[in-house]
Image 1 (cartoon, rainbow, N blue to C red):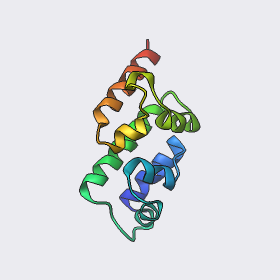
Image 2 (tube, rainbow, N blue to C red):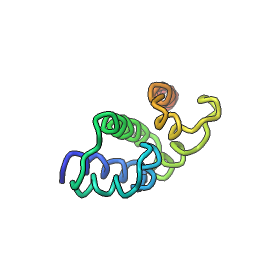
Image 3 (cartoon, rainbow, N blue to C red):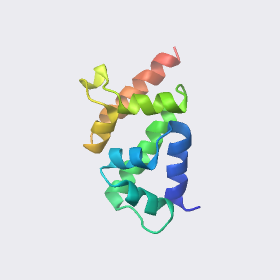
Length: 111
């Protein structure tokens, strides 16, 4: 299993995100994500960076959410993100905003 396929598997297991979900967050097509998983293609550098950020965020969420809860959180509007969903912000390149919120959640859980 290649490096990208391992990342996709981690995202699937810890965040219950299917290829369609990953494609939605990354702004690509599910078929493209499937080709990455099969090592028939490789993401562009900027898309790969976003994929790595998504994996990091999902990994952080896995500390306090079950996979399906993490998936719901990623696609649900969040009050502390001005009503936007983390998925939309990640797709728009506003990853730091999402990471800050995840850090706040982590801090609240560990109080």
